[in-house]
Image 1 (cartoon, rainbow, N blue to C red):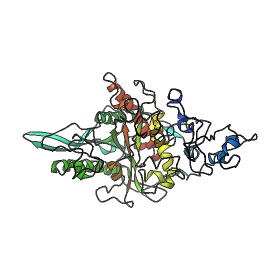
Image 2 (image 1 turned 180 degrees about the vertical axis):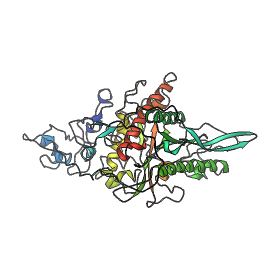
Image 3 (image 1 turned 120 degrees about the vertical axis):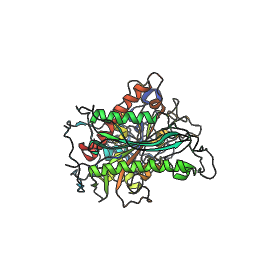
Image 4 (image 1 turned 90 degrees about the vertical axis):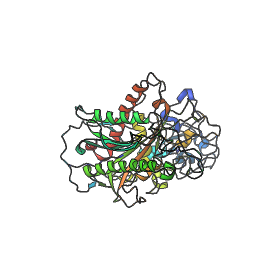
Amino acid sequence: MKVNLLIFALFCTSSYIQADEVKYERSYLRERALPPGGNGGNGGGGGGGGDICVAGSLSEECGAKNKDSCGLCSAYSLECGVNSECVEASPTVPTKAPTNNPTKSPTSSPTKSPTSSPTKSPTSSPTKSPTVVTCTDTICGNDIANTREPLQCDPSDLSLTILNNFEYTDGGVTDSLVKLLGPSDPALAAALVIAVPHGGSLKPDYIGDRTENDPTYCPSGGCRILADSYTKPIAETLANKFIQNYCKVPYLIINELHRSKMDANREIGEAAFGNAIAESAWTKFHEYINEAQSSIQTEFGTVTNTASIEGVGGLVFDVHGYAGTDWHNDGSDFIQWGYRLSKDSLDQSAENNCPIDITSSSTRGSFTHARQMPGESLECLVRGPKSLGQRFNEQLPLSLDSSETCGRGLPSLDYQDPKAVASDPTYCADNDGVCSYYSGGYDVKVHERMDWDNDPTFSGIHMNTVQAELPRCIRFATDETRNAVHEEFADKLSIALCSFMTDLFGSDIC
């Protein structure tokens, strides 16, 4: 049987919380006072900075602004109790489409070696704070994230093989500029493409340097020229952990050039500064991603979702790193998951901003195919119990890292609102009070479609893409623990990725 691939709040809270009390508690977005003049979300009733609307508060206090007893309670999915106190409501969860197997396009696939798939262990949605039910909680509250446990299989005969290699020879020395690695036999593939655009260290003289403020090629905010340190070895370790845990080989595309020579996550002008060799390397990087996608499509076929959109059932996973110097703790601890949705798009204090399926058109953001799979929604895929951010949260903490929160997902069910977190002085140390959040760049934009090099349109075959910005606590760790942290991180992330893919498209893809 053929399976498809995977390329790969309303918050109103009781009070501002102290960092030493609940710095990393799941209830973070549910235990804050409303900002001055904010209404806390989409729904009736408004509240000023001092209004509190939590379970147990008096209705007169909650409804003071609009003279409506329990007015604000109902706005926050609470209802009046027998003693005029706000109590938890029983939210009506939107009816989801039946989870029948999606219609697959008939494609022939090589016979696969039989592997026994372990029974998925249903993991209930994490225990929620009893104070406030957010919009995300209401919509995604019944979702169950199943865990695809590592298989009892023998990976000894499996490894990453160089499938394509773009080289350049100068002065008798040959450099490898871009590599495509993957399975020696497509039948051994996992439906996962891992891309590393900024992990290279090669600085050849035959490619001129990119500069930060070139008036011809740089945008108004300047060009980025610093590498995302350690993302290459982390991606390689992730691919090998996938092989060890599931006996399937993902595809891996590596830009070996330093970012000061070529930036593979930008349009070609800004990426290569007009250098012909750098332009060729940039083209090969994206062609190799598309080659991997096409191999997975050939092996697994496509799936048609409830909106009659045809897509390859897999994920492009674009690996990045960020310094986070505007955050506390020498760089933020959060993994910033990027779906091409800005902080404002994910802002739960803005009216009518949840679910993001309503505010995001079908062509906005990533997961343009997965969001309309049976029983799925963009809201829940991005920050519900089954989101990648939350799945990895459930694997934490990393035993070798000193911070309990290293690797927490932003967004995720625990941290639903990147704008709120990035504006919170508990986490953000920036002078203007707002820290950076990276929502996804060129790679996840263009490879969301198979026709990446032809001005991709919504009508083509889709892919599912996501960007992960890894914090320093994972990439650098300490000199003594770095390799071990990378190993543990990659092991936990491989489980989160395979579980996410399996819940969407079935167990044969990883």
